[in-house]
Image 1: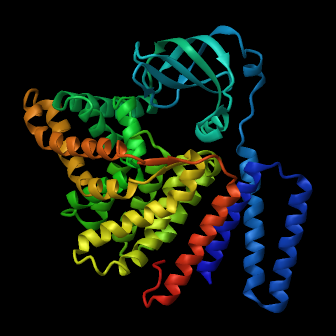
Image 2 (image 1 turned 135 degrees about the vertical axis):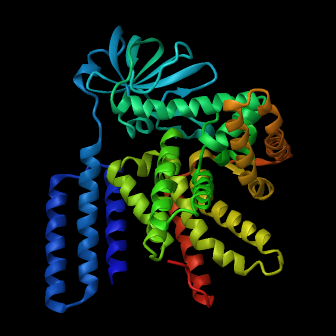
Image 3 (image 1 turned 90 degrees about the vertical axis):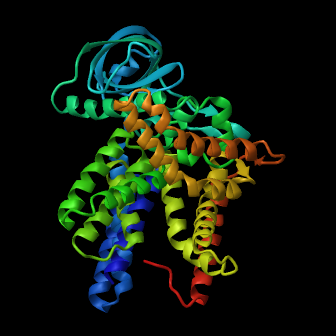
Length: 486
């Protein structure tokens, strides 16, 4: 019964956030909701039926989710409204690691009682925690047309991070170095940047950029044509530090510290994984994978059973508790959660139907890839409209070598810190694997009819698609002797 109650809390909380994200919830609805909760709880006390208790908890959790979402929505402060469209000089503190692009850096600055995204030239270099002076014109972000008649809600996408305004083509200078805990976080980010520079010493472009994407996230340096090839081939997830990459690192960390006492090893591994996720920019997918890895470490340290679906729901619940806007306005969070859920539930069912494949490694890889691809397909088509017909074979060809590519790239980067010219020699194995990955991406992306572009369609079709997928999984699992793992 505890499992049903936890599921009720999770579903109700998520449902409340979703409803509040699409529309305003009047206070009368909260009153009616509390009345409904009281009726359900009273019915449970009288009739002793658990269904009434579950329904009451669902409604109560939905009310909490809606209220939490409403309270977390950032509004444009008067200090920003008064400056929109005007060129001025502002001061503030950098509150995120600058996002370095090919010709610009995008710096999140806390100023004017909110957060502002500043787009400036690459130099001078700005670091986390610095106090900066900005000169430029303040503007508000707006939605813009994307592919296939879709509209990208750019304002909502930035709002999930608390950013309500932009300063494009800005001139930015540092006026004070980071201090206190900000200096410590800035040091973590500086290690990441130094490591990426070391990779560039060991590997030429675009191979060093791909290695950096595999190990630290980010698509900078790939170039527009190569990035397009990764998108069209369905391989872009390996260069944006998805949960897959983080879990590879987590497993490597576990193996590395396996010689330590169980609790000590788990504590050290937790610290390393946390620093890795932070240094990599703490994106939604990497945070989700980091939380799940942390729960797995705790389970191992305490000799408890690790229930992977519960861990996934717990990770999502914690992230939405901290930032409910992720649910609707962060594509990375959505795709990471859906892909992981599909992998957990669908891979075992698909694997049982691939008995013709004798190699267990190939069978598991094929099942995992198909499950993840099917899980994200409706959502991905809704967001981008790009149906990749080569995604499955591309992932089957590339994913087996990704862990090795990460390992040898890490070795090349570490040697690049200390070894100078030796880094090129140690980078040769990574170079070969990265060249293979790029070659596969470019080859399959250039095949005729590699992708099909679909026009925009309503979200209710996505809902129908997932209901159909869920019904199919339920029907298949009912027929199988092995239950879906929970």
